[in-house]
Image (tube, rainbow, N blue to C red; front, side):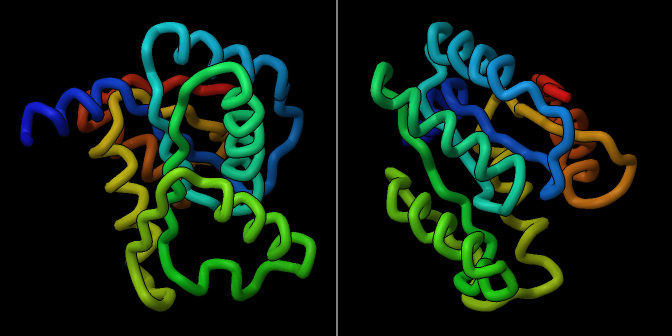
Amino acid sequence: MANENISIISRSVAVTGHRTVENLNENKLEEVFRLLIKKGYDTYLVGMAVGFDTICFNILDKLREEFDIKIIACIPCKDQAKYFTESQKEEYERIVALADEKRIFSEKFTSYCMHRRNCYMVDNSSVIIAYINKTFGGTYNTVKYAEKKGKRVIKVN
């Protein structure tokens, strides 16, 4: 079983990025995903937040029409969408329903559930795709954690 987990991790990619996304070239991001898929990466861990995560999920969902890939929704807490706008909630519910698997890290929001989700995503992947333009916050901390763990980080902004 341990060897199977290592094999899955070696083929897995996690995405992390800010909720506010500016000047992201989505065609370039799609090309990064295509290159990784062609290199054998077939499992994608997405944190399901508004912004970069949603963009990545939608690109990966589109790529499932061409490639046999799996999207795992890494949900920090059951009430993640509690403070989303109505349109954000609708989009969130739509993409959660499309995920191949769901991992939920807490029943309710806690000060630790996002961090726990982010560490899980890094620990269970070998490549991290990051949209990062700040030197603080969850995405910054996730990238630093990934670098400390020796993971390959691809910055897309």
